[in-house]
Length: 448
Image 1 (cartoon, one colour):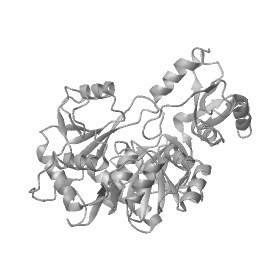
Image 2: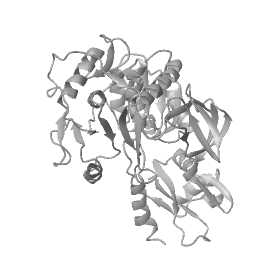
Image 3: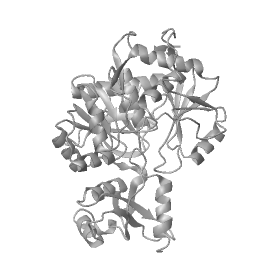
């Protein structure tokens, strides 16, 4: 059985994190990890509900050191937590909250006061590469959340491959700030594991508003890497404020339009990269939209077509990972993304993807938010119909349809086009399947 050190490199005083405008050394980080690990009861699972990225990381690595699997859920709503607790009755909850979300759930507080031990012996744990460390649940944007188990060796290898790509872009390891939560695969890989395993540093903060992003960046030394999403980046650009210098920006969770990528690069004077991946596969490839539509896989990852599907192969994967997207394979390491398999729609023989239509809608001047969806057909013979929900207080329906008609075939125009005051998105900027179902039930069924 091969093992890896819980934290890379020789234990020392080098900075691994920044919190409250203070640098945290690797030794201090390990001390907090081991202090929390000593307080964890014997169990198989923990819910890591820490919102502070530093305490989330401490809790994650404390669980790893004890052989405990972290359950990283996409929602902390009480009903969702109750359902998960029913599936994992041995789980305990870790968080900074004064009391647990569910009274019946065992709870361990994670904070400076709770981890006051200073005499912990700093003995670096060795972790089996094959050890399961997390069960990560999909966002629910395409249906019921599904859990995927990740092993220590795989997550370590993926983080190292991502670090190689990112540091090649920035020219050096960076201090990393993320606007995304660490409980999501993108946030976990890019804002926690990338800086820890890749020799960078991470910020404990998760800013949302543009002014908070600016202040959080200012707390970090250069070079800086900003991890975000198209939703957050659009808000950041609309705020029209000056940001501290960054060496690169990395985006995921939704397609990034060329228009937005171009604006971000012009405003921040830094390369804008986009990640391709999923909860089940992790990050697989990147591209720079302003330079090319072609994605390049990370080192050690190759793609192959088999039985009308595309699979990602790598030595750190237990088995080849089947992609849920349609791709044009240019070589084993280069491809173009055509659209998500479940997103592809066919109306009277004409094909398009919901992802492209959503991107087009969001690119229209005056559209603050919006999403296309399909309407349920009463029979298999009925021609599929599209609808769209849009937040655009300064526009009219006729104006939006006219703008869309310049780019798409009329069969893909949304009928009806529903105006809303806002759309409820999660911390990653995604609209959950349940939220979309509620919108359909409220606005479309009543019209049919």
